[in-house]
Amino acid sequence: MSLLIICPWPNLDEYRNNILELMPDLEVRIAPDTGPVDEVEFVLVWGHDPGELLRFPNLKFICSMGAGVDHMFRDPKLPEGVPIVRLVDRLLATNMAEYVLLAVLRYHRQYHEYRELQRRREWKLLPAPSTGTKRVGIMGLGNIGGTTARLLVRLGFDVAGWDHRPIEIRGVELFRGDENFIPFLERTEIVSCLLPLTPATQGTLNARAFSALPEGAYVINSARGGHLVEEDLLAALDSGHIAGATLDVFNSEPLPDNHPLWTHPKVVLTPHASSITIPRSVIPQIVENIKRARAGLLLNHLVDPVAGY
Ligand code: OXD
Image 1 (tube, rainbow, N blue to C red):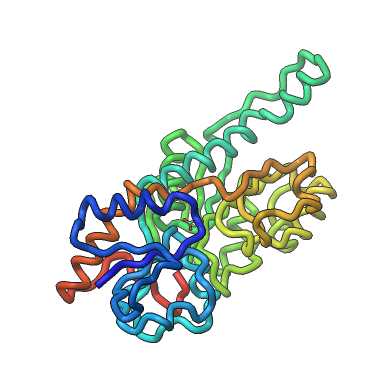
Image 2 (image 1 turned 135 degrees about the vertical axis):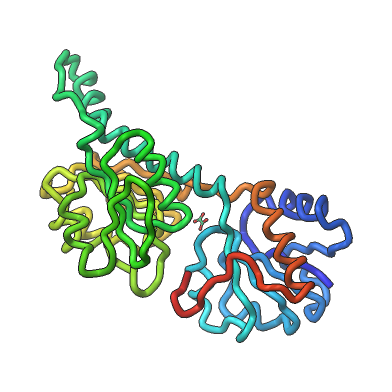
């Protein structure tokens, strides 16, 4: 019986070697080398083709190679009844928290304004930033959003979170549910989106959300491009209502050459690089789930197909 990796990334041998270190008897294959399809018990996937997983009749689980699982639900023909699991990893969370922190600090410490003053050789002090009164808002308080919120609280920021669940994090003011989205935005000077992408969260960062943010607010999106209505952001930046944006994810990736975000003076962008899966860190939980599946135990980090995360 085998584990199959279906993924376009370049470092798949590293995954295979790390798995074999912990489970030397497992057959690990990398697509398109599937081996006999009825021998495939476990698949690790990122961006597989719709319907592709139906080829394997004996799957025990499908595991996302990242924290997000929206890429799987783009497939309308997922094998019925096969559990889906995702990665919940300390490094995926802390790397993302660092990315958001970097953006928050750039805005909080007026980095972009001082760069501009340097360019003009102008010696000028801007008003002193005050961490305790800087209102940061985190959309989504799951593993990644929660880690990010805690880091910002430790540094003394005034942090709020928006989530549907009753999540309690010390020092974080929770705004719960759709009815509290606008009040959450109204109090937020720097907003960071770390939601899972589902039909319910698609397009959440739109013109209505931007106009609820205070004048001069900043937007950070490192969740999924589908959360952001890019034209609405461009309009809000051009009107001056939103002062700047840091974007790591886009509706179309790679971002097309002629996309206006590439050259927008108020945008800092990175190529979906905010938090990259590190094989050595995530393989132990995959191996643990293989053991659990074989022993008939409940899998860790199961995805709820109805909620979509
Ligand atoms: C993820 C990602 O989902 O890298 O982990 O986008």
